[in-house]
Length: 67
Image 1 (tube, rainbow, N blue to C red):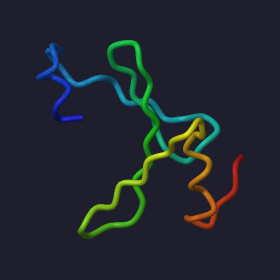
Image 2 (image 1 turned 90 degrees about the vertical axis):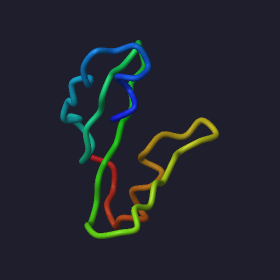
Image 3 (image 1 turned 180 degrees about the horizontal axis):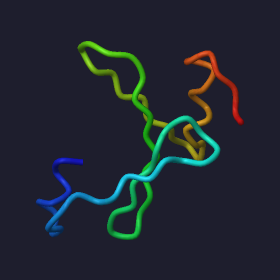
Image 4 (image 1 turned 135 degrees about the vertical axis):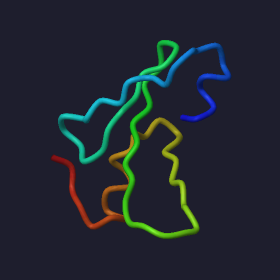
């Protein structure tokens, strides 16, 4: 998100708590991005959904189920 102001914005987009999932989402330039931060320490690991799936495909990895 730190790179977003360099893409033409003057401030960081507003982060909104997701209603049905444990994380949050941010809207920027007409696009929505859901994210959830788990754990602490380093290194950071980023898991990305693809092939038409959404972030709920990662819930079993964290031992949770869809709401």
